[in-house]
Length: 512
Ligand code: 9MR
Ligand code: 9MR
Ligand code: ZN
Image (tube, rainbow, N blue to C red):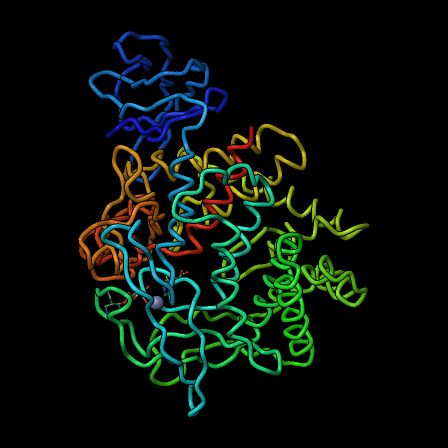
């Protein structure tokens, strides 16, 4: 395909841009379902070089009438796409249902079809280096593997709650699950990962990654890896945040989370940084870090909002003053951006600083936007689709703060990229769009031979970090460093914390 569009379509009001690859012609025709041209637009002669292609970007926002359309330029056509009021409702449902499919420690019931399975990983886990055992069942499998890790869990929870905060009405079509009960599935597990003194264990997994089997078939010993201050900070932050969301419906549960957050903080306040590294014999996901300053900052902000104590506010004010506020980072490694997004709720100067932080970061993103609409060009990291969704969240928030359309348009472009306006022409959400990703590095999808729907692929990654990528993508430019192959874990794995920011972005953008 040489004419890239959002394969799920657009709302009538949205800005619509197509990316045309190569010299296709001078005019872009918008054809209706009957094949009649309803719009004719000039294609700019001065094209842009990006990722080894010369592309032209054509704005066809003038198309506002509902219907199904195709774009044509010369001999080339786009996939057909709709213009309709709610083009993303089914996709958003699927992105949320993904968390249900990822459930550990409970049955995934018959509604999941071939992916149904009995409760998995229900045995007691042994604390690394001891004979002590713990009951830590529950939560979500992190990704294509079956590990359960606190650091990425906190990000996933925070994104989903932000999506709910921005627009609860976006989640009115429950399918396999509902948002707040689903998030609670993870939170209940996280609570089990806290040690009596308040510190939090980094993860629970088997010693090594298993083969491409269903989760209940993984029977090796479960091992709880040592504590870290990053896991403890992320835990304190996400528990304090979540506590507010369950306050009305279940105050007892909300109080449990608040108490757990306070205990984590009290332990953290006395603790020197403990950065996690896989101990001898453990080879599952590391989620290591170089600094826990951002985790501590995020925790202080959430506790200041939830508990109101002056000490949290004082800590947050000092830490924000020291923070390098050039970006709003929503990565699992640098969570300072959550302090920014959440800190906006704080009264006084701190709230103002956080708002400015978000708007300045969004402005910097705008300056990096490329022809495909995303804010990175030279290098794309492992899981770049997460960074793209994260950027969308920041741009969306800047739009809400300022009302400036440029931010909303840019936020929409992040979505359009993920759903088809990208140089490989994939809709990066499995089973959605005209050319969906269908072969993710995801054990239940590989074991059954059927792709779970609603999985956001990690997407293009320039580092060539697995054998398939090295073999098939050697020399490929960043944006094309993607292969829909289940063995390419560095370009086509799936993760709870890659789906989660896309859920938040979509929830925000579909607001009426
Ligand atoms: O399945 C694993 C995936 O979740 C990880 O992201 C990836 C990188 O750590 O590793 C995958 O496991 C592979 C392992 O590292 C090497 N042997 C083959 C495994 C499955 O492809
Ligand atoms: O998402 C993680 C990415 O940022 C890292 O570069 C990569 C290598 O360390 O690991 C990714 O996380 C994987 C985790 O270690 C194991 N579960 C699957 C995750 C996604 O591939
Ligand atoms: Zn499991």
